[in-house]
Length: 127
Image (tube, rainbow, N blue to C red; front, side, top):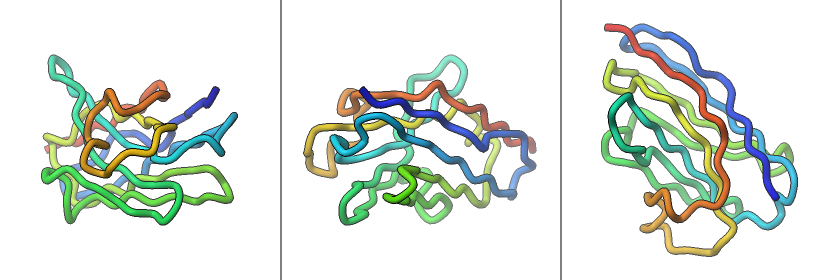
């Protein structure tokens, strides 16, 4: 089993920055990739970014490319999401997810590719 705990959410003005962190514990050696998703009220869960534990290859949704950066610290078992130039439409609950199956990067934008999920952290961007 793997446990994921997100932190770093909050309220920020448009144009500002936030850094989210996801701490993984348990059988983290079994993991191949990590992802961030978000869900706004009344909307489906949406892919944001993904990263491989080994090698650090990354994959971003078009809506955040150039503004968000995903990174990982293998020694600390953490995955961060640096969010810059935030917009009101970035407002959502952000979830960290972990995948224990080797997959091509292109399918890491699917929620069904992930085995473990955190509880989520709220990000609110005011205009």
